[in-house]
Image (cartoon, rainbow, N blue to C red; front, side, top):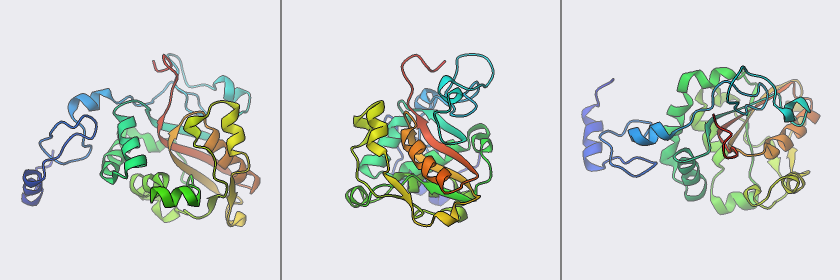
Length: 245
């Protein structure tokens, strides 16, 4: 492990780092800013998974889940790094609703876990799931764009933050479920320049995968414009109780 520089040690002395999960004081400010107990509490999503949407299975090899066998998703591949539970949920909520951007370095360090990003094709375009302009003005930033910039630096030159647009302000998806989620986002997205998507490999970026409705609606717009391949990366995935092995 690299020894901290004098400047780093002085900074830690003057501004002691704390765990972003539980608040425990840490000895050094090196990402990930999580104490050993919170690190242990992270649940990384790894095989066996659905080979399309990334839903984890208890045993066996990777295979398609029931939804993907029925062709219910418009994307080709989706993968989430972590299960949406504390402390991962704490990091995401702090970023999303309080603007705590210092958690991005921790998320970037976690994205390097066991070759997670090797699951994805080299994209032609990196597209964050957009916010409606009204919500963007209220919040001040798009968390999906922040994640794309900071956690996927190797593809930053392919980032096109204004290509995919959200032109209808909808009820927050977290307040809805099932069919209401799908109806809520119907025709909510469009493309500023559809010609840029034709024949392209797309990597969509969002913070949390719950039912997949948001990224599905984005993917349908991209597919209609002629995208060759659509992959989805999210920080975390919300799972029903008992799903995680």
